[in-house]
Image (cartoon, rainbow, N blue to C red; front, side, top):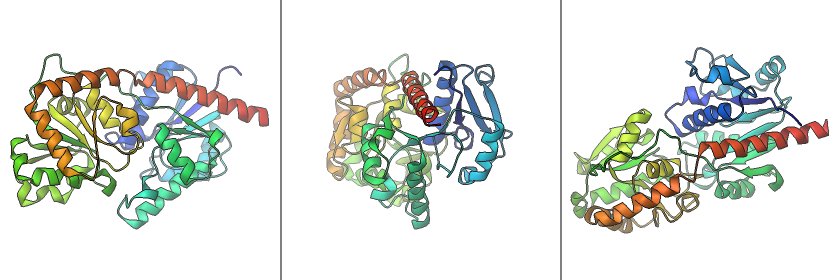
Length: 362
């Protein structure tokens, strides 16, 4: 078939711009527009400041009434009405849920099955809602899994046929780059939330140990910056919070870190690890989830249940600049293999195959 009209729900890029879902959606939207000019219809929240470069590249930009944290996506009739006014050949929903009975084939992105495997989110009602959102992916004509690990989790969790699940790794944007000159390390870095599977407790356990005084302080970025455990008396003066830094600030934090710490018990991808590598920041990551798949041999992989091994690895990096330099070099090379351009090309192939299959059945 010829040109395919692709609908992309880009609202997370505006509703959650500093969280993982929002940053992934923004990067995908920009790269898909460059790769497929005139083929992508963007759905954005009404009143949002759409980047000017998107306008000439999009087939159309459709402003939707701003939902309450994605509530629109639970409203099947509203989607059906919108798609009747703005027809597309395939609709990509990179976040939230897949409503029932949509009139076009849907490609949905799957991140991880953490709500089924860990008490994350910790509130039962939020965990139930997250599980329902994952189960809704069974309605999709095709599912984009962000890693081979994510694909395995999806197949083990939801009744989606294997032939409908495709892997396309995420990428790292050009804004994440190493400093032009070597920057002395000023802090340790943790980026993400504080849900139980993120394992922030391991990092705090290391900081509480007496010999951790030889290490630089910890900067906590993201939702975990609001965690009350950071205010414990024993951590006074050892932790700094950055709840919602912009990209420029985040890049600077990566560039100035002794290491990024990713002790998660599960990750569908682990985008901060890749961003850190691109910025010349060494990575200490858990030997769990998709982290070994993403990091390869460019990170120090550690057991997420053994804080002593993490403390020893941090102290070794602090004491041996040569070891840190070798990790920086390996990380920069690894990050160059993950680009949003590659992600967009792989997704474009999924869109066309999905639209072609739907057309042959109609």
